Length: 231
Image (cartoon, rainbow, N blue to C red):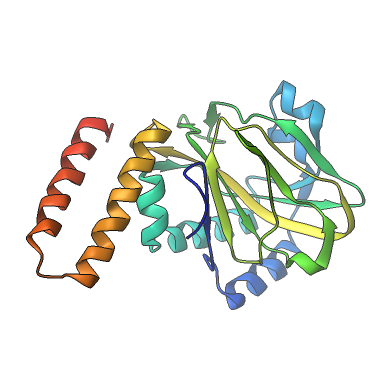
């Protein structure tokens, strides 16, 4: 895991075998215009292809991703997930891009009455960086734009209200999964404090496993979680 409080990178969410299997499955999926799931503002900026949300390939691969994330302690600590929107899959090629936009605050899960508040957005890369030119995920931050192009199987997590976009893919093809997380702790600053505290506790448990400070810090962590979480 790397990155600042607003942007966190998680390496090897999927391993090489899982990525290869996902790409084989996506080659047989039903692809539609990506604007099908965009809001009015986003649709004006969006130019890509997307696997239909009800396609069995999307449903099966989505379960693989969610299972992998549930086993990833760093992701769980950073996101504190309450609900996760079923992963979707997109493709950029031939100059396609997604201009600067903000994700909708609430997403309706297709075919259900359930809604997910988009506290966090996540992109899981399924193409290697040298397979395509352009296609960087660009995230606006206070000190300037953060341009991200990760190895296949790596994922990036960022605050859902952040301005972001995808640069044109001028060669090759960019495949990725994208989805949103509703956190138990909706405030980004509070989530960051809890994550930093969790990481300090983990280090202390290795470096000084018998330290009474570790038990005290665990107590502080859970007291803050009780105050801030909406479980």
